[in-house]
Length: 288
Image 1 (cartoon, helix red, strand yellow):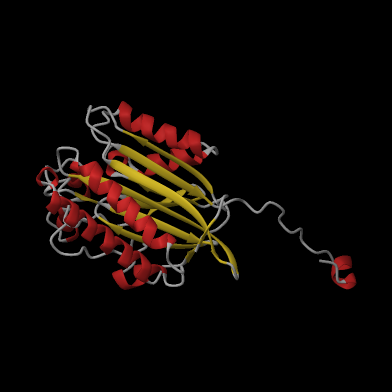
Image 2: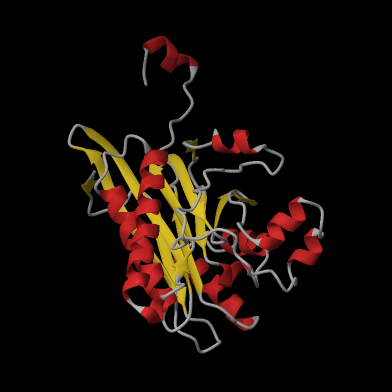
């Protein structure tokens, strides 16, 4: 793909350390491209990574994740997004493992990741861990991802209720991440309906976005403290994406801000000149 100066989507992004006093171990990057010299389709790629591991190792892992994943996408043809994303995430995971082996202080570090790849208006996603992706269409918000956490697995097995998930002591036990001994299984479920099966959700890759749709990528520092419906209402009430990003981060901080908070918003522009309906005279004269 070819780097482009200007993205075809409206973009806002903000990362904040939160109120706990710890380093910001979140990282993100948003890049814009043209598919190829002979393919003028516009592309935006965004990734959010949340580092895990002490002694500043988490931020190193998150930086490696964002760098390697973005590099893998940027240097690709863009023709097979899912295969490209899987390879890029695996390369990032291997790079984290290698760096940790070289520095004892960084042993055990890892990262989550959430990726959104928009080719023209087609959305492709990939994720590992508990960083999330959402789709906002009108007043509705849909969580596109499924957390790879102990509480999510326990809920799916009927061990705990949805209400118990929020304050459960194992809430932050991640079951899948970059930087482990084995390459992580990359999740390609893109849930546009909560009732969809795994196979149905995976078939949604390439989901067609509509004018005005907003895609949100975020770390769990936001979603631990701000509920999905609140996120949707705050973004809907603020047409300016930068204002929306700041409002979300501020609310998480007002509620304790116990973790780093990262928000990336991508909005499909409204059609600038919607076609007027053709009247009878236009139809007879053949006017467009």
